[in-house]
Image (cartoon, rainbow, N blue to C red; front, side, top):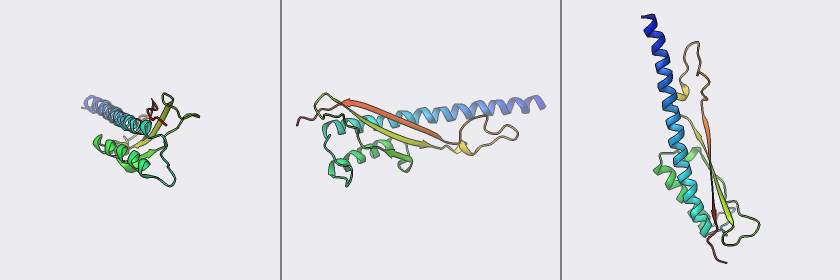
Length: 138
């Protein structure tokens, strides 16, 4: 019985780690899809204005918001950075879109007696960055 109890703890740990890594990986893929879609839109509209947001910037954010919701991400935990333009805005120059996401899972609050979280963090910070060439013609 004691051996079964000890083995069960380690099997539970393996399942917990597999679940958390699967959540991190699927969230990263969804976040990467968001940044790709935002970069594609931003490459065609590099003159968008962030402050105050114009219609093109609002469309940029709403495209990424829709992609995040489709990927199962929480929009309130996501940070959208404005597109980073190169020094000269010309077709072919790279434009970069960056997104940050804070992931917490239901297993983030699980703490084992005497073992703690076995070194697993309670939240994961995921960043996705996509660079695409500008397609806009001045």
